[in-house]
Length: 404
Image (tube, rainbow, N blue to C red; front, side):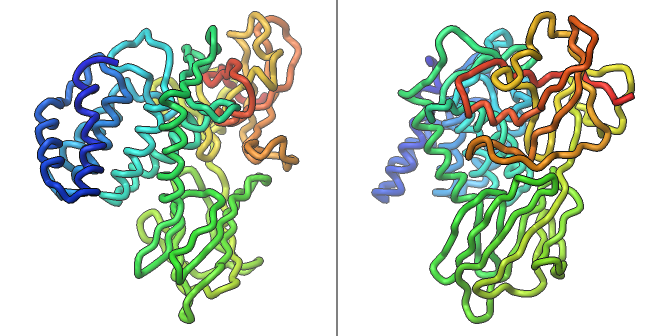
């Protein structure tokens, strides 16, 4: 990495020094860095650029300079609207180089953390939606089976392998693991009015007087998030659960009894407080969409007999064919394979293949191979499951048609 971003990214450490010492000169140095930073991304190292934006967000939290927040949001929006943003949620290692084929774990961690920072600062749902998308897809799939983060190679059909796997232990591994702290801090948040479940993960949370445990249930076709109240004051806990765009037909239940609730923005609020020992469950259906090259999203029922090229999104996960589990799919000539996608997706119950396996998101399909006519079987899996094994090809862009 070279250029101005090797200097500008110092603002993160300078803000931390200002917070630790109370010496305003560190923040003055941050202000001088702003004059070096401009909106033209050019051909720059994405990690340094995004680290600088994270430092700007920290600087805003220390100074409450509204013009700085406006600049951060402008630069973020510009990136999101550009071709630099990948379908998988993150960015490649360098801006401004269409031929460069690798991402970088540092950059995916940066973009995830920056999105969570801006959500925390502004409360705007678009930021947490984007954070969730990169978390479930490009960030998780960037992690190697060894726990390291690093570089992965992309091509026009998905991800491929390279000579020597890019475990960047000197940089990406540290930043990738550091990002998990920000994710944990975002799963559940609270103020005087309510405890809010923001991300569907299994965690145990407490602020001393209130405590809940969440359990993300993924083994059935109908999704569920289980919530147990570990601790509450005498008057109980007011609870709210974020309803992301990728779920439908949601409801909150205690046993088989639907609990009264109301919608406020992206959250379902229970109308009655919960007391210690209460067990409830958010139940929902996963939305299934096909994403075309131009960004258009269609329902599987809109498929016809003529194949289209698309990526399958099931709930928060992007699905595809993993060569590790389905090697015959990539036997030559595979580029003309056609997946026969069901109009009504039925996800079978499965026993866990591993603690990281998302069994509730495996879609089994027929497909016709480009080299021979008989119908074969393939399982579409979440991209994030690449972390279960050594890197192999993962095909996300599929030719898809309707059942006959």
